[in-house]
Picture (tube, rainbow, N blue to C red):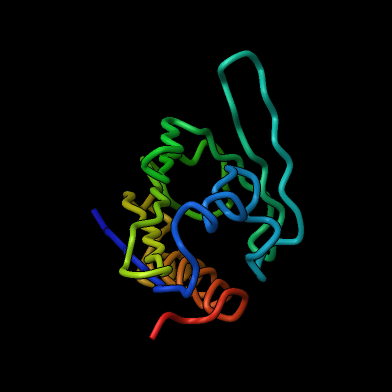
Length: 140
């Protein structure tokens, strides 16, 4: 099972950063590989539909903990050849007025998946964390 983790240490405190990027649908505001993100709420069930250069994918929110600045989601539908995909996004304290964003994914490859699939997921997470460095500045 591939596991990928990308991080970015930013010059913003966790509480402020969470307010700006912690919403489940906010990834569409800062990730350059996404054109738009729609949020769908049905009672307690929350999904986001991300539109980007890899097509459309639907992700379901599994756990949200705003006090710990954390959420976990699963991939419900995608053109990427993966299954059993679970992603986690969290913001950890990193000293005075700084935060570390930790974005991780674990998944299985379908029969059509290969090393290029793993590298695509790695690139997606990496491009996202790099965009956050550009937007907020790296902590020194």
